[in-house]
Amino acid sequence: MTVRFLDPRADPGAPVEPYLLGIDVTAGPIDIGMLANGFPDSVAFLDQLAASLAEVLPEARFRHYDKGDASIVVPDELLAEVTGACQAVVAAYGH
Image 1 (cartoon, rainbow, N blue to C red):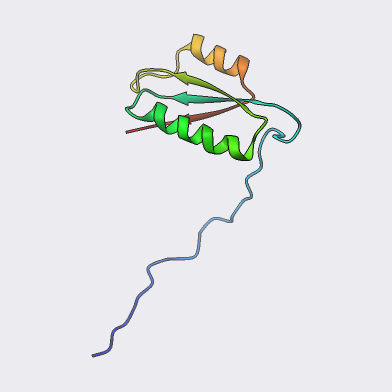
Image 2: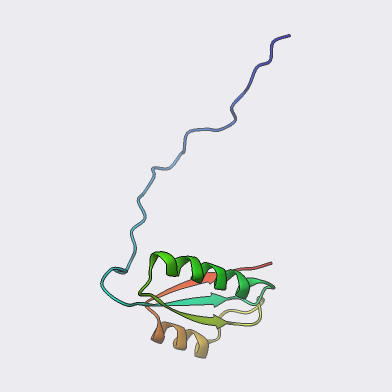
């Protein structure tokens, strides 16, 4: 009996575009916001992510935020606080 393997992967249909950061993380200390959305474990996930990022971005400062309710958009007051204090933001979901 012959076994035939069929590879279901196709070539990508869209061209690969390089990802470029919008800020220079080597220019000095930057503030990075870690915005949890209120799902369980979103805060813990972002804490771990910040710890990992700190290893490759030792001058970065991390500011932690939690919108507290996954069913709402970020309130204007919190959005103003985050964007006023941070040059970059990581928004994450947790489950």
